[in-house]
Length: 71
Length: 244
Image 1: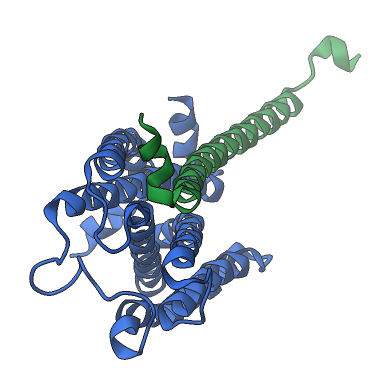
Image 2: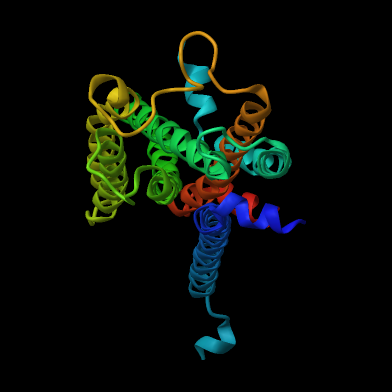
């Protein structure tokens, strides 16, 4: 790339920060959306695991004792 | 009669559709933005008055259009949620707000950086600039209001009402350069009749605008997936969805 391109006709200090900031905004949006989705998936998975554990505990309590255990 | 409408707005359907669309939107956005950047920065000729400073248009105008588009999308989703009591409307509105706010900030910052060499100042209390700043405050207000209530349903309703009230600001932003004396230039592309830009400058602008819209679509889909999972955590279909 020529020096003329990077200098942007003397407006480089206005033009390039605009494009850099646009890149930051696009990058932030992508990163935060992915992070939000992954966090929600993780929370949903934990909630499901907790519900499964509760169900399993309830099943164990419901099993009747054997004759030997009663004695 | 409305059965199809409600089926279309069911959480599993919306979640699956968003998951399928997001990568397509993202890929197409990368192509459109890539083309717009190369064509706009390298091949488009400098403006006869503004020189190379005019190239800021390739991020400023798409972000400004997107800031309005995202707000209208958020308000429409809020209206659907309030009128038909479709909870996915609140989820779409919640997912749209941070994206719209970030692009409003981008429009303001790039406009400010463009204003310095052209107007001699970073900021003026001009109708267009002021109404765009109000748009940013509206976005922040909608997000804050949603999280201000302990009951999420009440927060959703309050945020939806504010989004609808704030919709009045959208035509004000668009027509501010017509209704009042403004430093900001008038419409050059979105106007009745022919755009006043040369095609060599217009095509990269349209490509960037399309790229930003597609990017918004991709990010909205990703956020919407998270939003739905947060709201439907206890639902049976979620177990299948997160396993796949």
